[in-house]
Length: 421
Ligand SMILES: Cc1cc2nc3c(=O)[nH]c(=O)nc-3n(C[C@H](O)[C@H](O)[C@H](O)COP(=O)(O)OP(=O)(O)OC[C@H]3O[C@@H](n4cnc5c(N)ncnc54)[C@H](O)[C@@H]3O)c2cc1C
Image 1: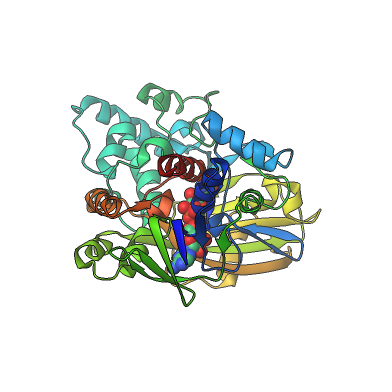
Image 2: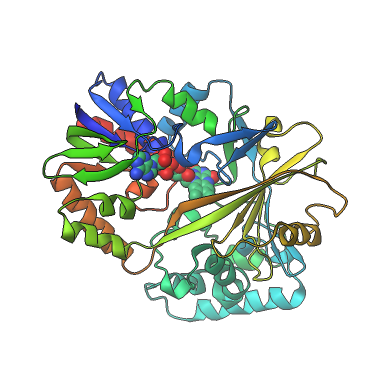
């Protein structure tokens, strides 16, 4: 089978590319997806009346087109929510972001944060070489030691000095130093960060968005796992069939895609320089409606998870009335027992020992975060340029091996479709 544009992966990026091609009258394309359903990481599952997302999947829409497209797709099936997020460390409950809410810390910790920042203000500012230096300059040693170092080590699986700082821009709220200091004295009224408020589908979880998009994509083949890519002969093997193409769009995780290439030893070798962080999600539902919150960060080593979110808080339709549904995100190491997770949640006051579990389910996410170590930026740049020369364009968080939002997937799909047409 021959198509003009062959798109690998029917997650948000692949679907957006196909949708925007079709919007421009281009129908000579095909999307190949290995799973039985499209959606990738944005797909939701419904189990016994509970709607499960692959960890927290909230819509952060920052561009007029992103908003317009999502509203066009979801129509009235869209809620707007205000963030209620916290950091639990030791026995403190600090509103998020930690660095703008120091007033909530015990006196000794608060002093350490203030002193750390005052010291940092006196050091000459040099361009930071890694995430540790970036944090020390921006927030000082106290905030770094109490939150930034332990939390990010848990999330990325690497200490901050091994991470670069080219990902932090949109993701790490950066109050002015003066504001960090003021926050040690009083609660600030200003809200920080890209996720102060967010959108979320009323019905169907995050998956409602990919379903709405998939319904507008005509040429999609599921159960078609790509096993080989030959860029010289412009062919792909998937689900036991061969497909030829003029242009290839890749949205599969870049290291996995590079390993599928045949006869491209130099290109495939870039895969070794791209580090991946997988995670585990544990879904837990209980028989009681808990006090609403959005999500909580857990930097302490003693807690088995690094983030817990209240899925039933994003939409009341995510869980039957009078129940609560949590998503619990954990590092990929050996999974703790369900009992240990339960005990930790009880100890943190999120659930009560007397609560009853109505559902519990593990969901491993083999590709979750592209690790921004010292090799990533150069390897990605060179690999993407070499692929583009061979008529293969990569898009999306995993295709471009970047840390980005769902909105970027939608926009990258649009930009790519415009380029191809
Ligand atoms: C834990 C977590 C929380 C997140 N939270 C948010 C959030 O709150 N807000 C936000 O904006 N973004 C969030 N994201 C990011 C968001 O998930 C991604 O930006 C988005 O899903 C990327 O879509 P994609 O299509 O590029 O990739 P994917 O969704 O990974 O799609 C790739 C597709 O390729 C398919 N595939 C893989 N291998 C093959 C193969 N060999 N053959 C055929 N098909 C294949 C997969 O099955 C999948 O369908 C989060 C990500 C994670 C991991």
